[in-house]
Length: 235
Image (cartoon, rainbow, N blue to C red):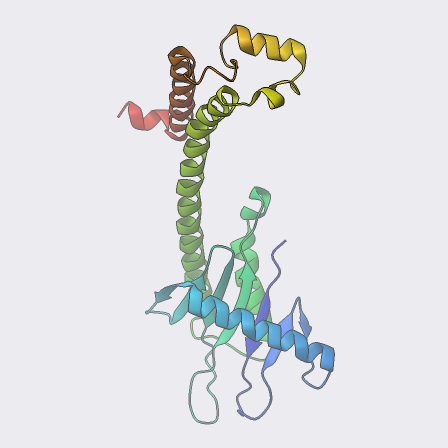
């Protein structure tokens, strides 16, 4: 479930920022709420400083995002006493589960609209702005997913290639004392297929390493093919 945190500087520029976490407004005079306010401001600073930036110049929508978090700035129609814009700042974390991906962007946009309404704020061309916010956040989400898919593929390929080779290498170089801890039936089978060998024999059987290499390449091929759509291959 997407949980958002919002902030807005009152237009008089005197009242402390309105900060709302999970639809609960924080009181700046309450010590426990003050601590939560400070944590909120720390999150905002972290995302702005470390995150990537996406901006829709036509609607003045700005989104900062990291691997886990996002920050959205939307501009209400109202301006402060010095005639300056006063953006609504909305913070949240990307969904972790696929089931949450279905309508989480809609929930974010609806909650921004609700927060604006609760604080008597309006938008110029509200429907258009909220729709562009939705499109911008969806675009950011797609870019983030593509990046993670690439990282996931690289990690899977690395493990698929390295693990079989590492396992064979470790077994081939297992000291006699460690070999004795392996159950006798399994140890004898390893010896028969030349995965384990007496300590004095330091030369790995080439056939075993070739098998390990074959397994690694086979794993890499299977993972790569699983990521390729058949429709792309027959075009």
